[in-house]
Length: 400
Image (cartoon, rainbow, N blue to C red; front, top):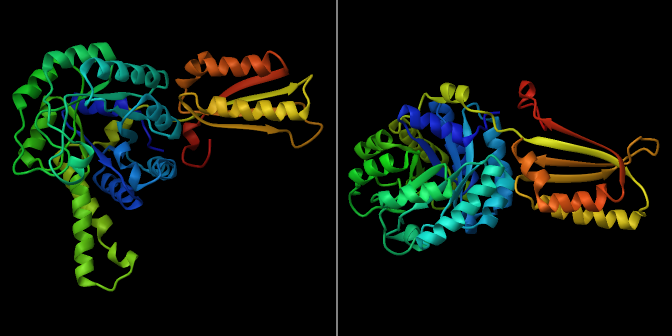
């Protein structure tokens, strides 16, 4: 399994002056192409799921596929929620398997941006998940970029960025220096002097949104000024669409699968070009050596109960599952009864955490304390609790 801590991954890029690609996915074609490209280039990569794209797919359905692809990859992979809009969407993303968050409150007034971002950072850090905040506003000029990111671009001010980072505790900062969301009109004019001042002011790794449309010289310069992550989607969408249009022209009577021929190859080629250009190609081995693996932890609780009939117990179990599943960092909750009458323990809970960092915050969460009070301090007896972490020696052989 090569699902790794995104904070470790991006700090390696920061220390070694290259950038990791965060490629937004809208289908399995994009997912497979991005992973294939990263494998072929031996490069770290971030699989990015953008909240503004949720109209194209079901977030809960696509995440198991993204996580499966990350776990079976041989190169270092992280999974991020891109342009998350709220604390609620950030919690859902972590609980579904994201191990990085990009919180976008950049269209809010500065004080509100700080408030919302800080609340997400506090929650995410309690789960061991790093957060990208955004200050300044990167707008779109045409097409989907303009629809999803309307208005005028607002460049990031270094003094404000320094204060924002100090007040929010973000791990990385997305900045606005002249890029646009979606397609560029003409050559992008990037304010590299501003970027230099931002890098000096905040002293944390920087992120660029609106990567499509920049030229090779601009891309090569960004990592030398603190940029460690480049978000990239529009160019992938465009090469995929061109491949389909070509196939439509050559095979007007073709089926849906006929017309998709060449799409994955086109996306893969563009991702390969970016990984080589941004300096991340060939870095997989050294990144894996530095990054902590991102592995789930399961808490097993076995117990008996007294003074409670089956109806009461069933209601309490159902209510408790709903309560615990909503806690940040809880991936899954299973509760069950023993199959055999003569088993020593009659009931069990298996609570799956995003990683071991979650355990401390989970046991202090008001909903867990409520659960514990209702069940374990009132009715449960002879209880045993054990935490298990995925064994790295058997990684990739199945469920932990």
